[in-house]
Image (tube, rainbow, N blue to C red; front, side):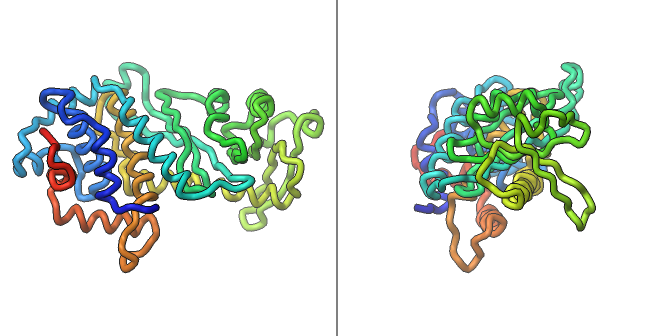
Length: 321
C-alpha cells in the first residue's frame, strides 16, 4: 500500500536512535541529510544550518562535518535495502523484467580529493522497469572501466531479469562471466571488437537507427527473442539515463558538498533513498501522480516548514537533538 511522505519518514526515523551520540545522533544526522537532498530551495548546507539555528536547533555545522567524516553508512545501506524491498512488494514481478544498467560519473572538485588522485566518483546501479525500484548500488572512487566490475553486476540483476547495458560493458571476458552465472543480458558491443568467433560464442544482432544513421551491434544470450525484440529491449536502456537526469537535476546528485569519501558515499546513498521514497509515497490526485509531481508537492510542504528536523517533532515526540 502506498503511504504519505510523513508516514514513510516516520517509519524510517523509528529505526534510528535518538541517543546513540551525545550531540548529533543518527536520527538527526539522517534528518539533516534528507532535508538537504529534498529541499530545492537550499543551495548549501550553511543555508540549512542557518534555518535550523534560528528555529531553535543549536547545532554547529562543524559537528555535522565531523559526523560525515567518521560515521559509517550501515544505517543508510539498511534503509535503502528496506525501501527497495517495500517497493518490490508493492509491484509484482513478471516472467522477464528489464534491468537497464549503467554508471554515471560525478566530478570531485575538492583539492583534498585531488591529493588522493581522485577526480571523480562513479555510481553504478540499474533500475527495474517492471517494479520501479533502483537496484543495489556500487560506488567507486577514481577511474575504472565498467567491465572491471563484472562480479558486482550479477547481484544487480534478479533471476528472471535481463540486464541491458551499453558499450562500457563490452568485453568478452565480462560477457563470459555473465554467462557462467546464467545471467541474461543484452549488451551493445563496439564496432572494433573482434568478431571472428561472435556467432560461436554469442548471438550478435545488427540493426540501424535510420533517424541518427547509426549502426548498432548487440551481443546477447537470449535465444527466444526475435532480432526486433532484442533491438526494442536495448532501446529501453535509455531509462537509466532518465534516472540519472532526475537524480542530478532535482536530488542534487551532482552537488557533492563534503570533502571526504565517507561523506560523499553518505550523500549518494541519501539521494537514492530520497528517490525510492518518492516512488513509494502518494499525494492528492489534484497535484498529479508523476514522480516530478510528487517532488513539487514536497516543495510546497517544505515552504510551510523550516525543515524535516522540526517537522519530525510532530511525527515523533521522542526526537532528541
